Length: 519
Image 1 (cartoon, rainbow, N blue to C red):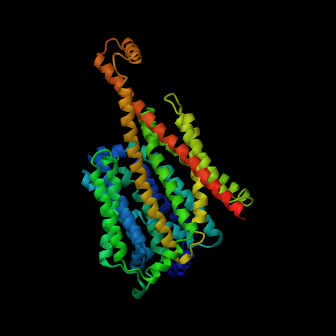
Image 2: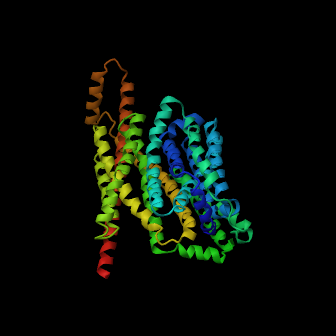
Image 3: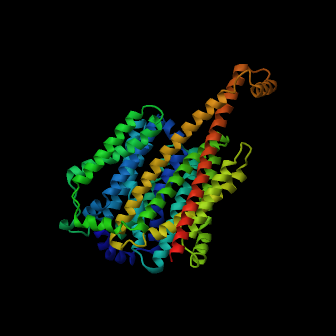
């Protein structure tokens, strides 16, 4: 990435005038902002939907708008950097994120909320790339320290999101899920103003896109995201809409490839990213973010609707997951340097896959009588998976990418991340709808006066509440059946997670064995 390579000297000069603790604070803040915001929204989605008067489909449209604009911003990252410089791009991104937050917080309708999330997507997309490039600008021990801080900031953002969301909902209202983020933007803005380089590329060297190619790219991205968004609502009904969106997206994608003028710089850039190490790393990043987003979607449903715990308790359990992840970082470092030096670096990923399988197995055995302590101990296994899987991926994926193309490689990784998040939510929604409908119908068949178990349960409730109308008792039994339905569906998801972990462990082990035998 030419703009990135050319910006090294100005950044190093600015580091001598910017205190280290301010730079580190900016890295941590930029890395965690989007994770905090999304963590709060995933946790408090029902409150936000009620506040803006949106249904599940309209709320998913807001998520689609955010992801679509974010992916487009990542695609155009190099183009924008070359024209305005990193300093102005980061400042504009922070301004867009703040403006979108103000729109969302002041929304009185679903349409204005969707608009606000789209504006936020234009800004939030660049945060991770900007923070990671700021880490790369440092050298030696300072770079290692910044990289560790960057990784911890990602986990800390995921940790603080649900907890901060629960605190804000208890003490204020849902609007502060957005307005409360504004103070966090001040420090990165100051650092960007004084530490990031301005424009460093001459006009004749700038990347250029054909206007039609840009239009086709916009159409392609919105069609793909629309397809992902519509799947949960049309999968069991009007599938012709999905087929139409799929064929339209394929057509737009092929026309973009045919229209875009592939320059020698573009070809060299893509060739440098077509290594087996980088492509494998992208797939592993995708899997990790997909599992992370699916767990973040399913776990609150299980805890609140399946087990009957309240909202703050759910936030506490999510926090335990990510705190466990941070606690496993020192253990990962010890295993990485002790075992990997004697065997293979991928041994940590085998450990991670087995931890994921164990997590799925233990969660599949959760029962209505399970305590918070039992759930918390199981969630530690999920923390082990996150650290032992994502850390070696982060170390190895970019090991063969030269500094000139690092920015392009990292923004491509973030595009994969956005797609993984969107697909994970769609998959989780479809899976719960499918299994809930199946289990509800099967349990509903047992609510009959000819069913001995139903008669016994009804008699027990009637004895406990003799003054209540029998119709109310039937409603209580229906509510219990709905809770049982959700619980069974969530447990089946964790059974899938168990098999995914075992399959990953088998594939990685087979690859290690094949490599060992070929020597």
